[in-house]
Length: 122
Picture 1 (cartoon, one colour):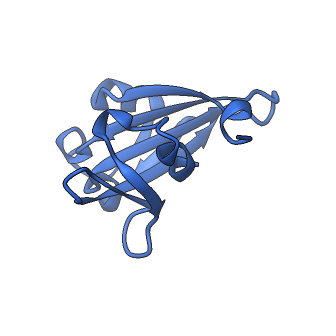
Picture 2 (tube, rainbow, N blue to C red):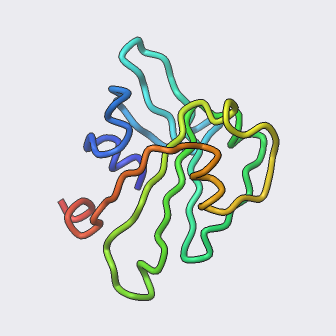
């Protein structure tokens, strides 16, 4: 989903990234910046529990993305919230268990709300 949204210009567009693709080496996703630098993107996802574990590779990534589905599948909702933090190592010092509310407090993420019905169908 992050690859599709990134390539459609709906996610991280403030960074002018392009060529989002699944990583073949390290990281979940890679994208290319305007100066041709490959950026490693780690992706986390949660349902209504909104609880995750950040490991070393998450913290050391260039960009950390948290996709929060909340009750999307239980309630047949198509709204998903996506939170992004650039240079997460500046916000999170060590691997840790973390809730979404703590992530938002510590990471000061950018929030993007996506309607899956309109995005993934096109």
